[in-house]
Image (tube, rainbow, N blue to C red):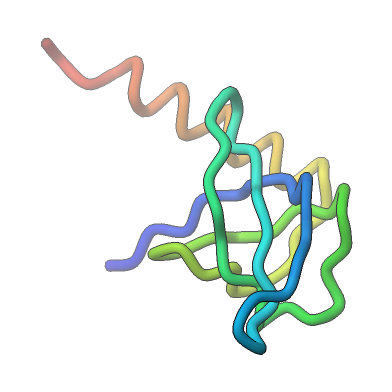
Amino acid sequence: MCLGIPGEIIEIWEEGGLRNGKARFGGIVREVCLSYVPEAQVGDYVIVHAGFAISTIDEEEAKATLAAAGDLVDEIPG
């Protein structure tokens, strides 16, 4: 099973011929490869798996997914 997490693109640049950027996942910011989503722009939401943005997603769906993931984490014992 693969897990893709929605993040908001906050910065984009090109490095070594690859399109890269920074994405915000709640309060966490990570660098991601944006080469698979050439249409994505700053402010867009993308699904990120293993450091690669693999598709775009609308803001409403991204926020609902993040909320659902938070609910799952809250249910984990310990």
